Length: 202
Image 1: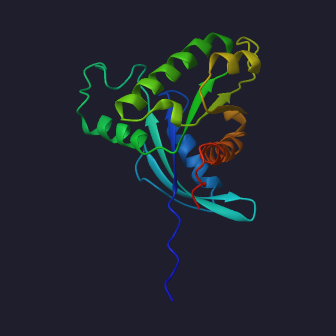
Image 2: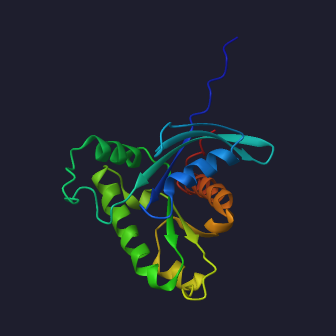
Image 3: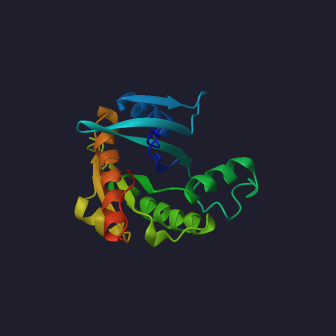
C-alpha cells in the first residue's frame, strides 16, 4: 500500500521594508509555529513552518523579500538587477501563493504604503506573475505614539486596494497580531482558490 504524498507547502512571501526588523518578524513567526526550520545567520530570508490551524496544521514555506523603495527591475543604488540576491527575491515572488505586505498605519507613512504596493505590483510583473491573481494581505502596524496620529482603517483600506486582499492590524511593539495576519493570509489564499474554481492546496 503506497504512502500518501505529503502536502505541498503553501508559499507565503513577506514583502517587507528594510525598517521595522523584518528578520525579527520571521523569527517571531517561527516561534509561533508547531515546528520550524529557519535559515541560519543574522538576516534569515526563508523558513519552513508547520503552522497551527485549529486541531490541524498547514505546512508553510515563508520567504522574506526586503524592498529597497523602488521596483527591482529598475536600477537600485548600484545593485545590478542580475545579482544573485535580486534573482532569489524575484524567484520567491514567482512562486508566491499569497503575499503579506506590512505597512505602517501612521498617517504620515500611508503614502509610503501606497508606493510599496505599486512596487509590489511591478515586481510581480517582473517575476512573470499577473498581480490580480495573487492575493495580498496588508498587515497594518499600529503604534501607541501621541506624536504620530494613526490613519483610520477605512482610509487605509481605500488607499491600499488590491483585486484580492484584506487588511489586518498588528502591534509589533507588543508582539501582537502577526499570528492573526498569517492566519488571515492562509484563509485569503484558500478563498481565492475557491473563488477561481480550484480546490485549496491540501
